[in-house]
Image (cartoon, rainbow, N blue to C red; front, side, top):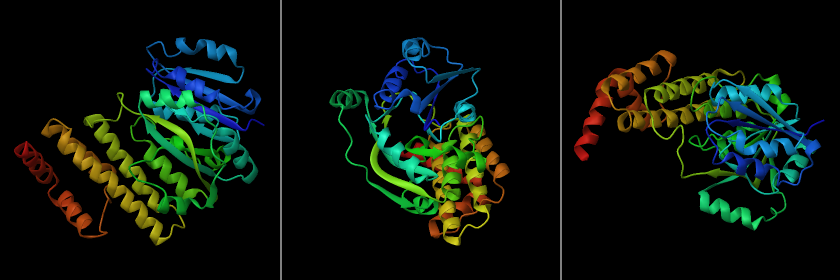
Length: 328
C-alpha cells in the first residue's frame, strides 16, 4: 500500500513549482512508497511546462487537469484520487524541509494516528536558497501523543490554521467526510477545526516539516468584497462546528474564542482594506445572514464588540473608518 499521497494544487506558480517538487524528491523516499498528485487548476502560465522533465522522470506522479475551480476544489479532487494511507497537502510555492518525511511517515504508519502535526518555518527566497544548500539531516524525531482536543487548546494559533503542517490519515478524512468548503478563501480555518474536533489520536512532532515561502504576492493578503464575504462564510462554517455531538463546554468555548479571533480580523480588514461603504455593508449583512446565531460573551471585550456589531453594525464600522482616516 502506498504510504503517502502528496497533493499539490497548481495555479500561476511557474517561478516556484519546480523548487517545490524538487524538495519532495530530495526526501530520500523510494517512488513506490508515495505518490504525488499534481492538480493543474487551469493555470495560465508555464507552471506545468517547467516541471515536465520531473513528471516524466517519475512514475509516481499523477496529473489532474481541470478548469479553474479554486484551491478548495483542487485539494478536494486531489484527495478523492489519493490512495496513500496518509495525505499531505503542499502549496506549490512552498517546500518541504529536506529529508523530513521518512521518519515522520514511518512513525505514522506504525502508530496510526489520525493526524501528525509538525513544525514549520517562514522563509524568504534568499533564506530558502541557503537552507537548500545546507541539505542537512533533521534531528532525531521528537513526538508526543495528544488528542485533537488537546492540540486545539494547546497548539493551535487561530490565525495560523495552516493545513500543510499536518499529515492526515486518509481513512480519518473519508470516514468523517471532512472536505474543504468549495469556492472560498480561508478554507483552512473550518477544515483545521473540524479535524481537531474529530481526531482521537494525534502526534505532535517537534521537527521541521514545512517551509512557508514569504515575500511574494498572496491570494489572501488583503480583504475585498469577495474575500470579505468568504471570511464571513468561513466564520459561519467554523461557528457551526460547535454543534458537533459530545463536545465539552471547555472545547466549545475554545472554538467560540477562535471564531472571535477570525471575527476580529474581519472587522479590522473591513475598516482598513474595503474601499466603499456599500461593500463594507454587504460584507456585514452577509455575515449576519450566514451566521444569524453568532454570539460572543467571553469577557468584556467580546461582549462590547459583539453588542456594537449586533445593534449598530453599520454605524460601528463607519465610525471606525472615519477615525482611521482622521488619524492618517
